[in-house]
Image 1: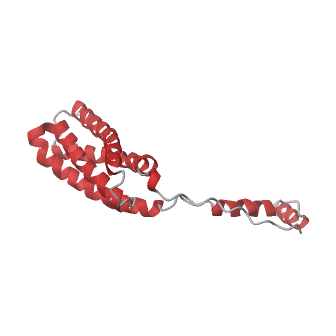
Image 2: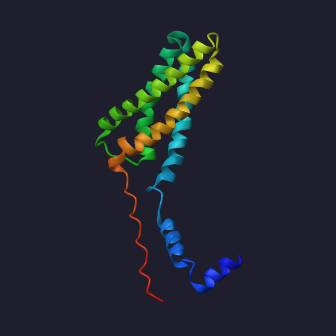
Image 3: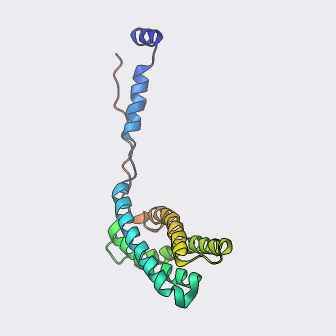
Length: 177
């Protein structure tokens, strides 16, 4: 404490540069609109997951686990991309709609790989697993796929239509004192 006090009083402690560094860190902002997008994306995701589970359970008997997973995921992925396009990312024009859907199907492929792999692992480890275990595994895999989906939708699919983050404001010039 004594050395700190002496350093402050004598000017040997670089307090001004520490304050400038702290001020620069405060000016760094999160990417434009990301919090609002995360909230909207989460709401769309919860609704999409509920629809996915309902479709999976409806088709599970006729199509088997993997078939029901693929079809339910495909149906909800197309709807999810359309809703996220409008609600989460604010794209309301028809321009690039087909391109966005095709890119969304690319993202769907990753989700399908994750959920299909999770189902295969469940059935390999517990061949008699019931529908409840399947749904739990699928929802868990879907959560992971959703994190990847948000990152890819934001950075690849809708990157060209998102507002740019404001550049960091340069620190104010300090006059020598």
